[in-house]
Length: 168
Image (cartoon, rainbow, N blue to C red; front, top):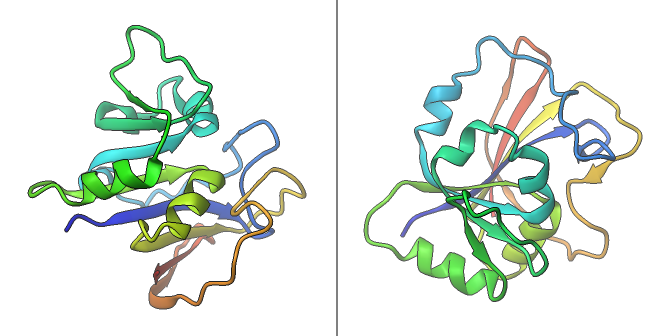
């Protein structure tokens, strides 16, 4: 079965984006192997807000991309696949595909929360950045349920980012 990995950067105070969806606060890490990271995935899952914030040239949108939204209308030139209902069911079908790489849940705390609640997230890969934003889009929306996770690995980067991986 293919795995769904929620891989995201987070400020030390728990935000995955600034108040307007900005991510320019994430420190540059010259040792991060972006090509190697992207090579692990062939499918990306994003919510409406993440898609809108990153669609202006985000490098991940070259792979098969599913956008989850009940209100969004995709531009005609978009190659993304719009999912309006049953996010968990769609992701379960993607995970059951016989061939393929891991699936990247790129961002969006609300989509992450719904897929986590449905048992459709296998691991969380979190880059904790040495930044305090004070406000923004939280890692998880309020009102979630407690989950106990298992630490898979941790690594401190020269940029000050601490990489944490947890099994759900």
